[in-house]
Amino acid sequence: MPSAPPPKTFRVKSFGCQMNAYDGERMTDLLEAQGIVPAAEGDDADLVVLNTCHIRERAAEKVYSDIGRLVKNGDAAGKRPLIAVAGCVAQAEGEEIMVRAPAVSMVVGPQAYHRLPEMIEQASRGERSSDTEMPPIAKFDALPGRRRSGPSAFLTVQEGCDKFCTYCVVPYTRGAEISRPFKDLLAEAERLVEAGACEITLLGQNVNAWSGEDEKGRPLGLDGLIRAIAALPDLRRIRYTTSHPADVTDGLVAAHGEIDKLMPFLHLPVQSGSDRVLKGMNRSHTAESYLRLIERFRAARPDLAVSGDFIVGFPGETDAEFAETLRLIDAVGYAQAFSFKYSSRPGTPAATMSGHIPQPVMEERLQKLQAALNRDQLAFNQSTVGKKCAVLVERRGKLPGQWLGKSPWLQSVWFTGDHAIGDLVEVELVEAGPNSLAGRVLRPAAAAA
Ligand code: 5AD
Ligand code: SF4
Image (cartoon, rainbow, N blue to C red; front, side):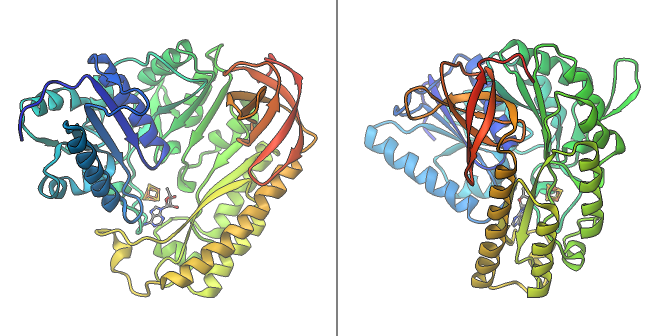
C-alpha cells in the first residue's frame, strides 16, 4: 500500500445499535484530539471509518459495497481515502477483510479503537494494521474527555454479554460482560453535563448487569449508579438500555418509583412468547416470568412505557408458537418495540439447528407481529393525549417555528414557538399519531423534569 500524507479530515459512519453510535462519537472525539477535523458535508474525507454492525445478515456485504464505493469515488477524484473498518464486522471478520479488501488499511475491533491514532500513522507510512484484541478497560482509559454534547447523550457503562442467546453474535463480537468503574462513570457523566447534556442514556448490551463499588467500597448495582448520577444538579433526565430480564433486581424496579429523573420507560427484550422457543434461544426466562416482571415495574411506576425486541421465525417456530408471541404482545401492551426476522449468524448455535423457517413464512409472521405492535403503539400514544409533561427539545422541524422533542415516555412530540435545543418545554399532548404526537406549549423552557 503506498504511503499517503496524514489525513486532515475524517468521517465516521456508524451502523446498528446505540452502542455503536456512542463508539462513533468517542472515535470522533479521539480523531479531533489528534487535530483531524470532520469533513464538511458533501466533501470527500481523507479518512473514512466504517463503524459496522454484525447483528443481522448482509452487514458484511454492505461493508464491502461501501468500501467499493469509496474506492471508486476516490479514484474518480484522484485521491483514495484511508479506510478503517471498525465495529463488530471488524471483530468477526477482520482477517477476511484484510484479504478481501486491499483498499482497507485499518481493521479495528470495538475494544481496540483507542489505538486508531497509531494505526493512522502506520497507514500514512503505507502499512496496513489490524487490532481485534479485547482488553476492554484499556479503551476507555485511553480515550480523551468528552468536550461537546448535545442535550441528550449516551454513556456506555457496561459492555459485552455472557448470556449466549443461541441466535446472537454479540457475545463473540463484543466479548464477556464488563462494567466500567463507578468513579470513571460519575466523572464522565459530570463532564457530559458540563458539556451541555441534560439527558443521559446509560448504555450496555446488558446494562442492568452493571455492577461496581461506590467511593466507600460498597457494592452497587445499576440502580445505585442511577441514583448517584441523578444527584448531578444540572442533569434532568436519565434513561438506560438494553436490559435483560435475568438481571432485573428489586432495587432497579424500586428505582422507577423513587427517582424522579429516571424516565418512565423500560426497554426489556423478550424475543418470543413461546416457552419452547425461549428455551431454544437460551433466554433463561419464560413468557410468564417476563409478564410478572413487567407487572412489578408497573406497580413501581404505573405510567411506565414498555418497549421490547422480538424475533420471528427462530428455527422450529410453529404457527402455534408464533401465536403465543402475539398473545404476549396483547398482554403487555407495548408503547413501542423492535422486531426482526431471524437471521442465521455463522458460528452461533442456532445456525446449525434444524427447522429453519422459509423467508415467506417469516415475512408473513413479521407483518402480523408489526401490525399488532403498531396498533399498540398508536393506542399507547392515544392514551397519553391530555397529559401534561415536559418535552426535551431536540431539533427544529421543517416548518418555521416548529420543533421536535421527546416526552418522558420517549415519544416524539411536535410543537411550535420560540425555543432552543436543550430546553425542557412544558406541553399538553393534544393529538396522537402512530409515530408522534402534537403538543400545545403551556410553558416554554419549563423548570420541570
Ligand atoms: N436474528 C434476528 N434478530 C436478532 N437479534 C439479535 N440477533 C439476531 C439474529 N440473529 C435482535 C434481538 C436483539 C436485538 C438487538 O437484535 O431481538 O434483542
Ligand atoms: Fe445477544 Fe442475548 Fe446477549 Fe442480548 S442478551 S446481546 S440477544 S446474547
